[in-house]
Image (cartoon, rainbow, N blue to C red; front, side, top):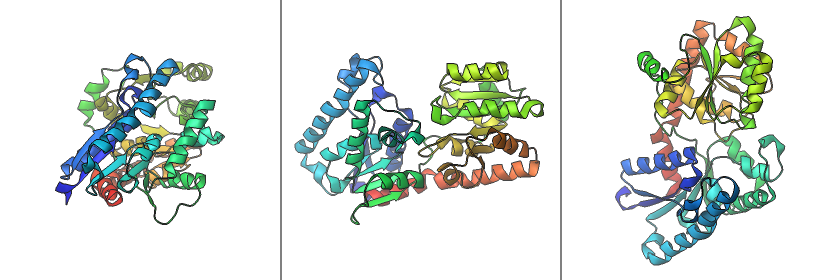
Length: 381
């Protein structure tokens, strides 16, 4: 049957540079192709956005909106009208990102499914302060539009139980003929315990000194990522631990730098902005522990990425982090730096550390691509 089925993935707008969503679409596309399906990715046409330096802010955002919400819906309708084959039951559409839910209106509902990665922006647009997401007046309208569009999805995958539950809370109970389920994310790239020599060679390209142990955080500087807690945690450790803190991802903001000065930690902070994939794997593989104190996430990829690299993880105790870690991490309240410090000190016990790392590696098997693809094929078909 796979040879006769065509899967069309609706990906994200390239100028927006939403790297995780682009990798997600690429992961599904490669997986379906390797499984013998005819798979392809359709992305919004870049027309007006060619003139924008940044489609995520200012005038450039509006140019991007023209491409995404005016031009691409027309393109979708034109493609469907121009090819009757696209309405054959052997064709399936899957929208890879819930923020593109309005495209559901242009696609045949019985042949279309969608992934909901989180409802943070939606809940933020509705005024929920626990998301740490704010929205302009137009942003509120946009998020309501996305939510309303999601409510019409016949087949939907939520990447965590938390995301599923939060979505259900926002939308009245859906009719029984709708198939909504939890399908966890798979790894969207390869992560492994990198050999120490290779890792050292790669990290030499950065400002990080491997002669000094370090804690690692991976992600943006968004307030919900709670990067300040790592500073408070290390300040509490005091003379019990004299290592550094490495922030990989977005550049450090003024608030974090000012806080580090107050705590006397400025010289112990290393920032590696947008490391390439191999450097990232090297960082995961050599850190003393990976610390992820996020207040809220839709899934929390870095938790399993660190586990796959054979590192102990200390993460928030709020959903979905325990769900994703599979119990193979130490968890503490994201407001309790003392608890994070105590968790780290407990890793001095070699037996506990070894067992935690082994359990983390075992947990990662749940997120192997073949398992996730099977779940998606069951949903899509």
